[in-house]
Amino acid sequence: MDKQVIKEIRQFNRFYSKILGLLNSRLTNTKYTLTESRILFEIAAKNRACYANDLATELNIDRSYLSRILRKFQKEKLITKQKSLNDHRKIFLYLTEHGKQVLDAINQAADKQIIKMFNNLTDDEVNNIKNYMEKIQKKLAK
Image (tube, rainbow, N blue to C red):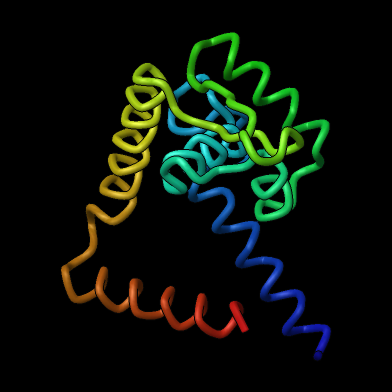
């Protein structure tokens, strides 16, 4: 790959990180980091089939780091853990009602962030960007 292309991709990554506020320690004016928010999202998305070990693998997160986050979530009563009846090494993760409320607030804040980011664009411009994002995602997911 050409060095100039690499430089331009890295420049775009820095630009987009700044636009999304990813360098801020907290996501969308909540007390949770992007990583913590993503973990909550994944637990909710798995809907009663979320194992801690699978989550670490899927998100490429160090298991000890994930464990610290999960302990924090338990302390804040965002999640509950339950050992599998078939395999005690497997631990199911569930969002509590409080955890669902926190995730809803995070999602609403993230939605507002996107609305603000695209507010000055026309519908056609937003759709063009969305289509480019889909193409990028498809190409990089290979």
